[in-house]
Length: 445
Image (cartoon, rainbow, N blue to C red; front, top):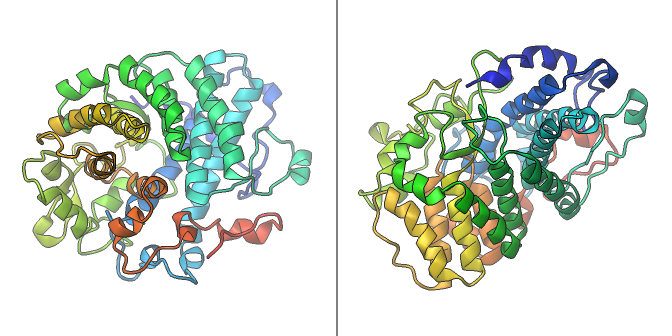
């Protein structure tokens, strides 16, 4: 199931940059010497690995699901001037930023040079995924859609482009092309590679993030119907989703392998309390423990968190080796809950409740008591927290929810004072700001 790594070591050598990033990394090699772009595509897949642990940190430890060690608490501070940029840039942001741009450059190489339509569609999926992560984390970012020569690097425009332009001109077109060009099969059948429904599900999430719930509903409905989501939820227990890396519940996951060395630590170590920057008293927040404890009939609680004698840790990934555990980018339950969210925002609250209850039923819970659009909105947010706990979603869910329900982020975080919207995104890596006059830092950092 780790076929992507067969040739990746060679391709990482071929596609390695001659210098450290940067917005426009070094050339990926002479494209004319390559006849089979499959290994180049595998490199694009592999570079996504370095973004896994940072997404776990941004999504859960920035939010109310995870806790940093008391000596590394700047992620929990939301008052200006924030120390986040100075202390965390080299640890989290620069590796994340560099890895995704390296994935983008490998994808560009395939998109521009390959004549294999399926490979190109996969590359466009990976490029769309990379830019979506970058925009979610940093807001406006530089855009590169070519495979630059050394001469072109010197002339490249490295200024940050408005995130809405990136959504409309890069991310959405890439995911639409992937949706239309990839086979409608399972990720398991494709050995973990991208599929039509992975692209379409991610496209639906993008539209929801943009607040375009009308189009989001259309895309997500197609995934729910096409994958047989209702049947998967009713037949596959929650625990089985995490018992193997490739199964029908997982639409796409970034593959991890013990045969490849990563510069960062495994994301599972953060959740298990095995990273020195995670809270020694247990990296899982008491608030999340309490959220599960509120209803003991929820089968997800003991399958997600072990109280560990008062030092709670995650057990969500314990069935597989930490190095071999893939990072789930998108799964059926995520799509169903996004579909419920879109239906509710489109004033189809009764239909939204039906979808929400599919998730609750599998968790062993009674149907929701929420009825009004406002209450269902909160119920969906609460359900996403429990269903997708410690999968890197929580912070981004809170930021998206804030657009529909102002004040909800402050209420959920319970920080003690209002959190400025400046801190909904993260600081651009310091090395980028100091290396390029065109790249400015995000406000507040």
